Image 1 (cartoon, rainbow, N blue to C red):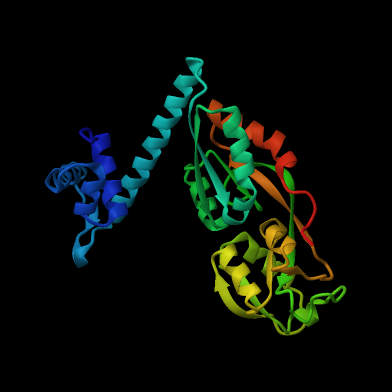
Image 2 (image 1 turned 30 degrees about the horizontal axis):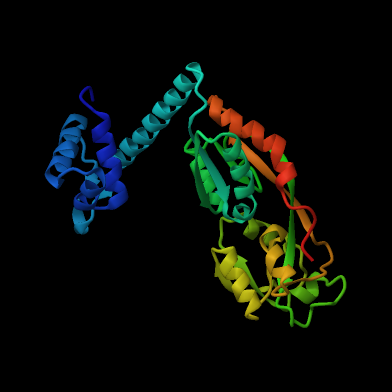
Amino acid sequence: MKRVTIKQLESVRAVAEAGTIVKAAEQLNVTPAALTSRIQLLEEDAGVALFDRAGGRLRLTVAGEEVVNAAHGIERVLTHLDVTLGALRGARSGRIAVGIVSTAKYIAPRLVAAFARQNPHIEVTITVGNRSEMVAQLRDHRLDVCLMGRPPADFPVESVAIGEHPQVIVAAPDHPLVGQKQIGKAALAQENFIIREEGSGTRAVFDYFFSDVPVRHPTVNIEIGSNETIKQAVMAGLGLALLSAHTIEAEVVSGRLAVLDVAGLPLLRQWFVVRRADRAPTPLAQAIWDFAVEEAPKLLPNGIAA
């Protein structure tokens, strides 16, 4: 593939994300004919089809997925090069990609804002998602650093604990269990629970906490991918929820949620800052890593909402 160009790789990735030539052409500010020509030339050079054109939408073939992966890889290399050359010029500017698990979005902005104030010429790109999504992006080298509750173990990472992450069970203020002391798991097992989706760190904690209950597993009333929606459902009386204490501080203070006194809780996890161990960090990536390790413990909330 001696004739392949960056524009061709960008074109394949854009079509893969948009699903149609027309939408991708609009995003790239080119004509559909020009975009089609780029992809056809690349397919001719590669000797394989990059898209399955059946069914009205363009879907990547296995070869097309490899091309998209290569496009992401080249983008990372060019970004790294730009930052490195900037550092050699003595410039402290460029872009950093930061991942934040959705539960951490209640605390991470404080850290990012503090870093941004000290480094006004550094552009910080933030991506928020559940744990499995952030792990996937870290695996694909699409993040410089990530703030999460449990570092991945299936590929090499470096991680540093930066603060406690307490987990508690909350209820509507008028729930019968509010005010009771040292509530046991057997009593909780009779309640309906609203839980996070599979793949989230909070769901993993929920499954771990109730793994040894000798009675029936708590009834999962609703499974939701948003802490905000879960809090609203609990306030409406639809059930209990196990959540990070950092996510419910405002609702507890205002009296819209109550933290139950449960035996064995709060379950104290840790927040970690994580990065790939097999990739040399750029100077800017090292800067935000050092800042997070040093400053995050000072910026995290103190204590547990009650």
